[in-house]
Length: 266
View 1 (tube, helix red, strand yellow):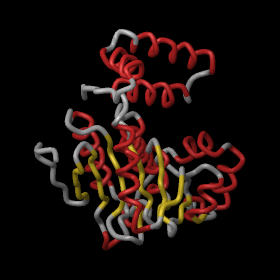
View 2 (tube, helix red, strand yellow):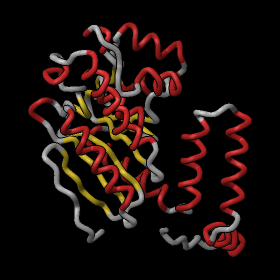
View 3 (cartoon, helix red, strand yellow):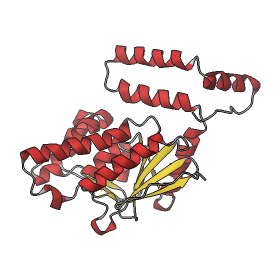
View 4 (cartoon, one colour):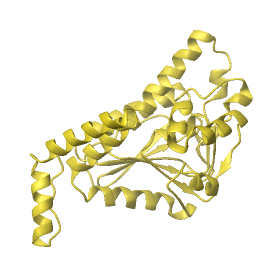
């Protein structure tokens, strides 16, 4: 287990399993709804994770079995005027952007309700596993608002504009089986095994070349925002950079020697 000190927070709980950090949103009294304070803590915890050389992957989940994150705290949103509403939207976007832009893998373990801001946070993670009781949705238009933490942009990129518009404009919630069918989640896992499966996935990723994992993440995340020809050039550039790394030489030599590669964490 890592011996570096874990930060402590009011609304989050952190755990480590070797090189995997688990971040629990921990507000059970409101089904893990996120307010500005919680968003700030998620941002701080993400920065600390990225800066910690002993940690290679992050799993984000909610405390308990009922809710991943039930949404934004409506009591905080209700009194906002136009300027304050735009400000909280930009702030929420900046926090979930940190998850998406992480150079290390981030996996959402969606254990129950993931509505509104909770669904948007899951969308920003690189991969999503869901429990059998997971329910996801963007219900904002029912409240006279729209998704404000990136949902209108990430959901179409993930499931296509038609499906995204159906879900956003109808405010319909979907269960885990439909979420898996349309590609919103990678796969469904029994509730009791969800966290362990997310950690196992993270650990499987961490057996691979760390520089290659980082480069692949960067290529996919940045490439989704580029025209195909520019994305391909970006990929070739990263491929070339890796050719100068110890990781590549170790990985290729290990293959030729028919032995496991001994990669070093950077």
